[in-house]
Structure formats: C-alpha cells, structure tokens
Image (tube, rainbow, N blue to C red; front, side):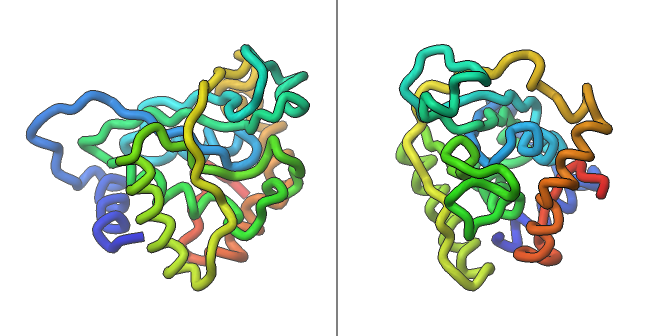
Length: 202
C-alpha cells in the first residue's frame, strides 16, 4: 500500500482528512473474497464506503440464487459503493488484498471451491490499470506473487435479502462462523500488522 493511502485511511478513521473541493458521484467496485458476509463486514468499516451489496457474478445463469450459484459457476462477491472524495478505486483495492488470503486460489479460508475464489472484477481499462498497479505494489510489500485474479466484470446479481448485512442481523451466528472458519487467524498470519479485518471482534 502506498504511504499516501496508509496515511489517508488513518486520517479518515479519525475524521482528519480534508474534504474534496468538488463533489463527485459515488463509484463502485466489485470484489470477491470468499464468503460475502465477511467481505460486507470488512468494507462497511472502510472510511468512504457508502454501501455494500452481497451478490453473485461470473457464472452462466440469469438471476442466480444461493441454491444454484455454485453449479452455475458464480462467485460470491460484494458490490462496494464508495465516495471518491474520501477513497478512490485504487484505495479500495489496496484494502481488499489485506482482507483475503492472496496465496489461495482454491477458495478462501474454510470455504472451498470456485464460488469462494477471490477476484477483483474490473469494469473498465482504467479500473484494470489501477487494480494491476495496486496488485504489483501489494505483491512487493507481501514479498511474493498473488494468485488472486483480476477479471472482467460481468452482470452482478444481488443476493437474497437474507444475505444482506448478515453480520448485523445475526451477529452471534456471524462471529461463530467467522471465528470457526479461521479467516482472521489466517489474515493475521500472512499480513501481520497490515491485516485489515473490518468489524471482526475476535
């Protein structure tokens, strides 16, 4: 992560970063990082994030559901809507690497299979360039190449209401799941002080 992004995130966390002189329209990023409940919880804690929506992307079905998204080839993902006056697309991706296991392309943590593989989905060449630059710098900080993919965005299908804000609706179940899955232990193990675990309590 560039020093500028590190400083900005900390300044924003304490309400000290200056506001942009010109208001900009909210923008979006689509990120797959394993269980979408956890990705939502992580990014809801990022300053400048306005909304997170769990959903499915990358498969062959129209209107996939939780029951058929796996055989349909979809990944669980989250659409992150953010204020570019507070954090830019590059900053979102910088945070993303530090919420996942960048060494695992078979799923994430205890969740295995294609539906739980990590990826950044880009909607333009500008996003691809920023994602690739972020990946290169994060790999340098990490000390090894990532297996996490950068893919073209296809249709994002919002998940059922049951899955939206699951960590808020069912906090005890969510924490039991997250702890049991070993997500935070693994992120701390590979990222150390750079790990970002959002609203994790364990």
